[in-house]
Length: 245
Ligand SMILES: C[S@@+](CC[C@H](N)C(=O)[O-])C[C@H]1O[C@@H](n2cnc3c(N)ncnc32)[C@H](O)[C@@H]1O
Image 1 (cartoon, rainbow, N blue to C red):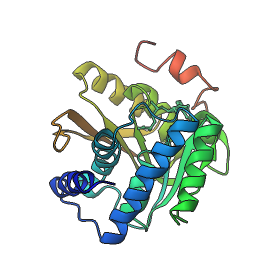
Image 2: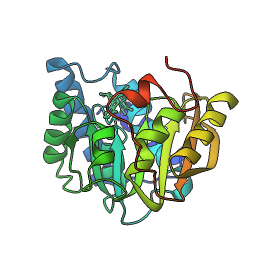
Image 3: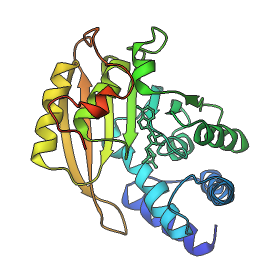
């Protein structure tokens, strides 16, 4: 990472009131290299420049820590992790989290696994699969303290993918762009249907760039009815209380 990239990362993290040790900064620098190298072999992410990766992947992922919902020794699943976001930055900044980055695309998960190994992040255990499948498997259903998710789907869809995985009392932390009242209302209705309650939807601006973001936090308040999640693809094709794309 160039000195400018490193300064930008520190500036972004400081704006989120997050410090980073020299070791953590070194891990981010190595992650940047691995992501740029990996992107030359397989198409992992549309963001390619140092500045974009630092701000739109690293700082943006770190903003999931706003509000302290991911503090502590927690079992976390990251639905639709792609090239490892927010999982990898969260694992660097919060080594006490036990994180399962999940994605249905094997080549992305292979990259996340190899990268976590190269960075020595042994709290990260990537998995290939769909959230709907995990949500129905006894090994994973209602077993997690937190679900994190960034840039995967509209809120009503996320509720059906995420809530079945949470133990009662657990939280979904969804990092979204700007959201409409309509999406939030539909999300609240879908949450209630699958055992959740929206606790907050906090708008904020991404440090340095100023892009609009919303951190939506949903608590699992009762067991998810056995009929959810519906089979693979249905939550997206026929979203609860929402229109399909
Ligand atoms: C736009 S990418 C976002 C990646 C990453 N979260 C980020 O913020 O850069 C969405 C990812 O979600 C994955 N995905 C979508 N629906 C999924 C599901 N039901 N189960 C698992 N992965 C899913 C896709 O394969 C894709 O890699």
